[in-house]
Image 1 (cartoon, rainbow, N blue to C red):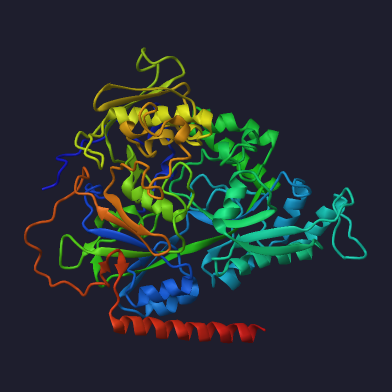
Image 2 (cartoon, rainbow, N blue to C red; image 1 turned 90 degrees about the horizontal axis):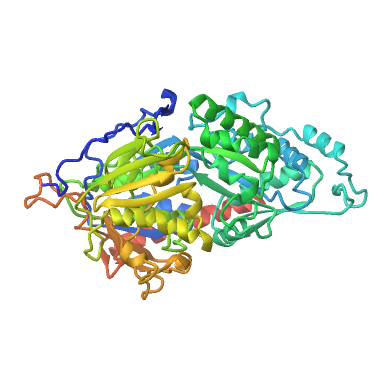
Amino acid sequence: MRKLGKRWVISVLIIVLIVSLSRSPELISAAFEVPSDLNVGPYVDKIVYIPIADSDLRILALQVGYTVMDLTFFDPVHRPTLEADPDIDIYEAPRNGYGHLTINCDKYPLNISGLRRAFAFAFNKTRMTTEIFDGYNTEHDSLVPPTNPWCIEDDLGWHYYTNQSDIGNQILDDLNFTIDAGTGYRLAPDGSAFEIVIEYSSADLIGGEIVQIGVDALYSLHINASTLAGDYNEYRSRVDLHQDYDIVFYSIAFEDFDIDWLAYDYWSDYANEPNQNPTNFRNTTYDGWRSQLLFGETYEEVYEAASEMQKILHDNVPRLVIYVNTSMQGYRTDEFTGHVPDQGRYISGLWTMRKIHERGFAHGGTVLIAVNDDPDSFNFFVSNNPTSNAIFQEIWPSLYSRAPDLTAYPYLAENLLVEKHENNSEVPDGHTRFTIDIIQNATWSDGVSLTAEDVVFTFNYCNESGIYGNPAAIWLGDIHVAYAPTPYRAIIEFSTENYWHFSNFAYRYIIPKHIFNNETGIGYGGWNTWNPLWDPAEPYVTAGPFVMTDFEVGDYYELTVNPDFAFYDPPPSIPVTTPPYPSIPPIVNGRPRFPILLIIELVVLTVILIVVIRNYVRERG
């Protein structure tokens, strides 16, 4: 018997973000079926994330059954091996994201757009397809991914797909980047020597090969360049805080088709704002389209702004997309079933965690998932770490989730009403008011009821903590007021008619008022010093389908089902009759306990892998 009872249908179409402003039909994806009971679950007892930095060892762990899926994507070289295993399936989908090179547009001479454009012309993206991804890649230029219906890739005036260093060299010649006769490298227009360093994560096995293509492109332009392996979290911090770097490599994954981020990620006013505009890009023409992107009255107006902004970014290259690879994840099917494909989170996302269950049983089991890195924080206000984000989505609630097809799906929300002045005279002219009724059986993990007071406090907290640097204030845009007229009704009002207001608030994590209250709890100034779990003295009260129960840095991160979750479906008293499949190694005291034969098999496979790698390196010289 499910705990919630019936779920109300949304009273206003959510595809209408503002009354009278509908999305184009092309923007609504029908690629994934969305079941009516999507929220109900979870059916497993535990999720355990296991950090395994080496991608080949993650494949081995999957093959021997130590893990049952991987949060990351595998190298296509492993595809034949995984396809040959009858207990492993492969999920693949066009990636809603890309790998890219972020360029410091503040640093001379990289602040010269012609240098960045010359680099883009010289970068050979076809090498990414043939040498790195074995054909499972799409050459792409727009900073909006090809899966996104707002993307204008086919309308761009030229492309940076192949090595066009002849064009790049001509651009540099025209800009007076002369070549030093002694070194053979170019000098900046002011006559100074310079070197460009491309940084990448030392934990990324193919990262070195990827950035070497970038160095080769710079060499073809007679530019002194080198690669530098480092710690991902360290150089991401430098980028996010606008500290020193030349070019860095990392990837971006989008979980939706919204593009309001174009108004923030490259806006001149945010070139010095922490955690915003990481490229330090400034362009007045680009800024001029920002208002129309955000406040356009029709789809056509918004599309025009998005199109022009993409063209400006393509011409000025603050960030160079270098690949859009096919996302491929392997997952075992011998123990668990019920996996949910997801257009934004693929096969290892939150809906799979909500719906999978052991074969032969309706409930139970521990899901071990390989990740390539430890979480960097359990404070979602400060973390960009993929492992941290995977944990956040399992333990924190929001008003809406993104369904597998990336459309809005009610979570805490039951009913939504969107109003403007023309249909409610009480709404000030030019404002947008959202009235949200929430479910009445949600509770925090300390037993306190989750109410509309928590909802409105969340947005007021984010807004008020903005003066202390909290980037969450930027997420909200021009919020005017948030209040709760009743315990289970929240009203959120914006001072504008923004195309993207719904997304501004709908998917943000709701926080407990009694924990974050400025008088008794963390307070507005504590948004970034809150250090939960790492510091046991810090409060950590959540309300998602799972709760964090144990972890050992570098070893495991354990989530346990939350029986008080609003949509939890308790296990039946009698299991179904199908006999259970063999279990993966159980967790004892938080650590996987291996059978001795499994240990031997893993060691043998590891030794074979090491020998193969050594021979490969020896052959490559």
